[in-house]
Image 1 (cartoon, rainbow, N blue to C red):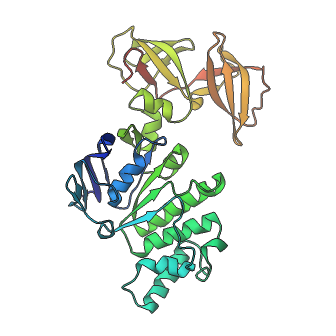
Image 2 (image 1 turned 135 degrees about the vertical axis):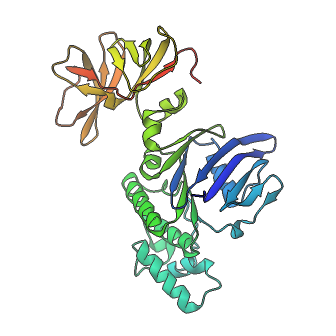
Image 3 (image 1 turned 90 degrees about the vertical axis):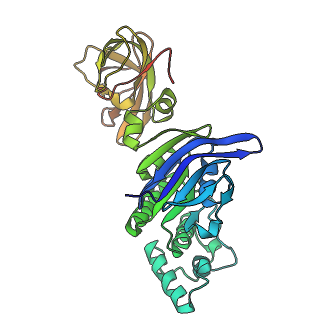
Length: 351
């Protein structure tokens, strides 16, 4: 299947500062991908270059195999067949909902505009809101209208720049999943820029970890969590603690919590000093285990409790217990290591 969108080694600069460097990825038709990274990493600049708002210093961008950006050429944004949803919704305050949605439908008749608007309001769950004004809507409703407006021109790709960050956590999660479902039903691809890894993992078919204008790893959420390509990605994604270890075979590491065997082979020689990442879900409660740890902190998460555990050596681990296993701080609990996806990095070379 030909990619809907391809970015080939693009570079973007502000003055002499390269903020996006040698960055490549592609988007399949109907898929949802996320660019995930901290503020200032360059992810929004990438989105702006796709939209046509940011020129390229090097590289190319293709849509349906046709060149839309290169160093000396930028196809106008309105000719790219894209929809956009912004963080601040960008609705026209003086126009009602119907007029906001139909703004891009200048070549349609009044009857067609009304029909398309009604269909889109139904799609985003706001049927009957056509005569409302933006100030009469909640933040979540405004964002749905912004999505409906982006869908009005029937784009095959929608760009979304932190679209849910102004909403409270519960609404952000619910609306994000609703938007994903709408786009999947419509067969529309999307690129989401976010700093929230939970959002990226919940919504993205593929996720790119962006740092200093580069993609460090482009992968599925599962692989990013269980098979991070480098130390930064491993540390950035999810929670966990690194402990020292020594490689005793191609897939076994000796640590202070015993020998851990994983599902991958490492190329380093036996005896290599490594760091092992242990996630909270790698530490399993086991009252019969000889390995025990003291609870020093606890955080109730609903179905689970996140415990901070201190080993006899003084090292600390994180572990998720079922919430009905409620242990007071200071209690010693039995644990075992269940790290099938062994994540280790050479201690002297963590590139």
